[in-house]
Image (cartoon, rainbow, N blue to C red; front, side):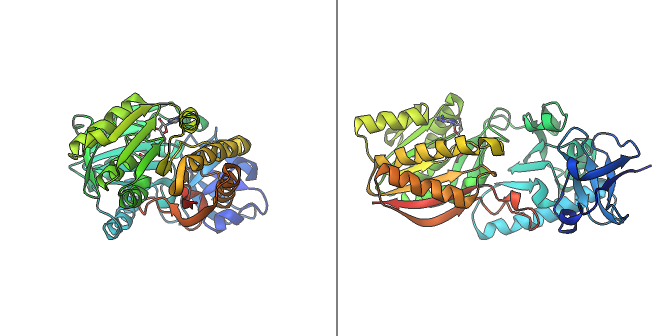
Length: 396
Ligand code: SAH
């Protein structure tokens, strides 16, 4: 028997608007003893069918919707259809950039809650973040093998958020054979190394692709400071774009060593790039003390906000690095600044950057708003899908 979730009165509104989450505090009753991750039917208080969803007994998000269609079964064919739709959306990518690495599935935004799949050439890296994704792992793998018979499937579900769903971390080969790591991808004409086994997330920050290209175009004859560089994406583009000097700053030696290899791989002038293992907060202060100046600075920090409670502290962190960066810019210098925290509203981030300019004693203009690339789409009913925001600024 299929488990059934019955919502409290008036709690069906978000599902009627096709938002895919059912919160525990909106539930009146769970019947039929569903297993963790099993598909349940969701009904309104007055008995109307609303959705089929994955049950997650340990999470505040108690169920995530697979489908609003009562006739649709959640099986291998369901995953094949959703993956085909996701691929069709990614087929548009060639209109915007040139790449053989992209996010194939962006969870809720592709009707596949809790599932992230990044495609690096023929390697598909999966992150299964929800009980439902875990429950249907076999169906998902079979669907992927059907659609991408040549591909290697590798799992990188070694992430903390799985705990909220009552799941252990998991990592390893699921199908096929993994090419030697690091492996190469090609993005906008640059060759870049990524390591899907040991890299952050699935190996690379695909979401910044367009912003890297923009920085590359603007870097000519500029001294560029790339803060939170990871494997040097922005820095490699800047060097290729004709920067006079580039400094990558990160706390990860592994990331910086890949960054150095990327310079070599593209035949770029290694004498114009420095790789610095340092804490950005401290390094920016040290540069200020030394009177060091740059013409362009990229600030792409990790997620500072992981809960609503941490928003204030995170805001101070963003303001601090933005203020320091502005103080290091020559008059007329360019700042590309980002927040990848979904919980940081775009308007608030803009205010933080504006306030940072006041504190820095510098005049600031916002030239352009920046965002995640097109392979990280936002589903209409799910504004949470829009998480990466940034501004291109000119500092006088
Ligand atoms: N800009 C990168 C992605 C940055 S991810 C790209 O386009 O690929 C954030 C990076 O910040 C990670 O590599 C992490 O190692 C680094 N990091 C986190 N805290 C740091 C700190 N306090 N100082 C320097 N680097 C930090």
